[in-house]
Image (cartoon, rainbow, N blue to C red):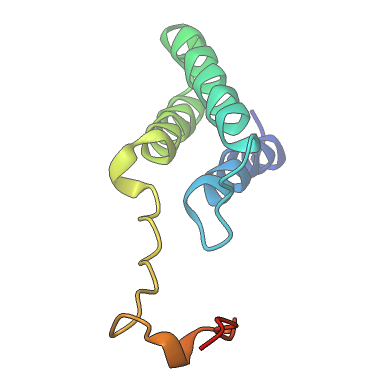
Length: 103
């Protein structure tokens, strides 16, 4: 396997991993699809790895397997954003709807 193919395969792992765990992590329906794709790649690597005899290719595939596992590991998932809670409870003056009660 040449360096160009290895780099392409590495990018194919890095890009979905960034979408799951990076700054612009997805939270919509794409998330399970990306996770499923990474699981499928991990399964393919596990299937091919025992038949590989070339040391460089074997190390590359082991690295891809580890990167895939890291991307799927929950401890590398982004934490939920902190809720923006008010410092105090809103009062009647804080509401945007005026009180139209007849007095």
